[in-house]
Amino acid sequence: MNLFSYLCPTRITFGDGTASGIGDILSEMAVSNPLIVTDKVLVEKGVLDPVLKSLADSGLKEVPIFQDVPSDSDVDCVRRAVELGKSKNCDSLIAVGGGSVIDTAKVVNIGLSMGGDLLDFEGINNLYSPLMPMVAVPTTAGTGSEVSAVAMIKDYESGKKLLFGSRFLYVNAAVLDPTMLVTLPPRLTAATGLDAVTHAIEAYVAMGANPITDSLALQSLQLLFQYLPIATASGDNLEARAQTLLASTMAGMSFTNSGVGIVHALAHTVGAKYSVHHGIANAIFLPHGMEFNIEASAARYAQVWTYLCTAFSGCSSANKALGDKFVSVADPVQAAYQLVNAVRELLKDCSLPDKLRDVKVPEFSESSLQELAETAMTDPAIMFNPREASPDDLISILKEAY
Amino acid sequence: MSIFSSTDELQEVMAELWREIRATPEMAEKLIASRLIVQFRYREPEGLLTVDCSDGKELKIHVGQTDIKPLIEMSMKADIAHDFWLGNVNVPMALMMGKIVSRGPTPKALALLPVIKPAYQIYPKVLEIRGKSSQLAG
Image 1 (cartoon, chains in turn brown, red):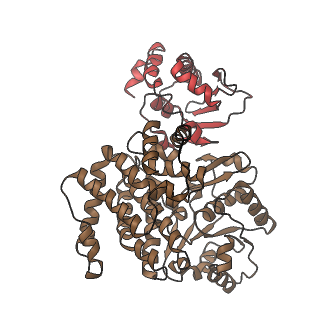
Image 2 (cartoon, one colour):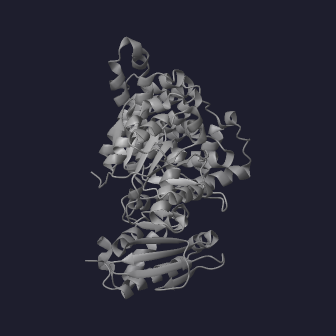
Image 3 (cartoon, rainbow over the protein chains, first blue to last red):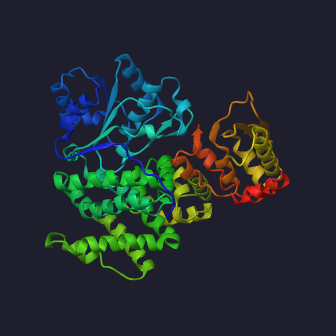
């Protein structure tokens, strides 16, 4: 067996209403002056209320809130949040939101804890001491940022993406409260859910996959195939919200230790260039990326397929459709294609687009194809892909996905 | 015990390797086009080597301390560098496992990994010339 290391130091608290226990979690961490990082929509919808009430019950009534995190966060936003945290002498952070909010809060934590210029800490393993205690409360089920060791933000001034990766970027506690997701609209539920599906599938075949990440990815996929269509169609179904939230976190624990692959590389590239939501871009590229990888990973995809067939074979009458859909086949390549087809059907079940042209991406010119392929070749995600890809391979996938 | 017995030996081997890379157009041209300045910081034994392509015209090699400010720093044990040039290290995995520390826009450096692959064939020859061919078994 290959050498590997696995790390997830984050304490995970799961269940309906757990966000109401944040005050206790902070007390256990011996901190008393948190900075809340979130976005305006969540504040307006009242999603933050249980967190604020819990803090007030713990005697924290005047908690500073930074609510200006945009959907695509940047250095300027981080610097403003750091200033607020400094001015209020904050000793900890609470991130309430989706991936952009949690990533932003992680980088704010670097600024508050380390001081100096943020850019000095850009890179991998470039932090040398623990940061302030931080709690993350995800309000989407997809990014896995609450259990990942990385954070990515934009620097609009230089036009660059900044990547921070360090074991000190794991948050101390993740609070998985399904009730925090009930107002998430169907399309965002589906898009973020497909981000989680992509994490799990890419993690399973990635260069860094190991038995621990495998088990997390498999269980995550079982939950997502079963519950994501339900959570998308019925946002107030707390059971479906709970299972997809759990699955997203498990997929996050998997990919942050194994890597992702070609689908993420293309999704990052096209998403940044044409402002396509990350989850939707992943959803569109996933079947194509899997088909490209079958040459190297048919046996691994077949393992996933077999696992899902076994898991769904004993489904109750309510889920009989799953049992009928997931039927075991002996040939690994055929099984791999069955998995690809199941992903395509999941996209349909969740009413997600499966072509780039359907999400307002303009038709590619030869030069734009070349540029996109070259950019995707430099994306760190592609380094973990199980099959080496050339720019021509990427251009073929881009054309197919259009 | 490290593959390299001293800072001088380590830096001489790495500098020689980079001179060979500079003399190989298929690698040099793409590295120069990147306009990156990458500094390699070694430990056990300590060593420092800076590759400067910032002017887009030539690949300059600086051994030891320098005033040049690198865009990217890569820090690692000298033995990890040795294994890397033998083609035995997956850099993203080494970063993930904390064996390599990078500072700055790491993806830009990772993007050049395919470019320098031909150097895996050159490195054993550099070791051989330096009388270190016994280290090839790793």
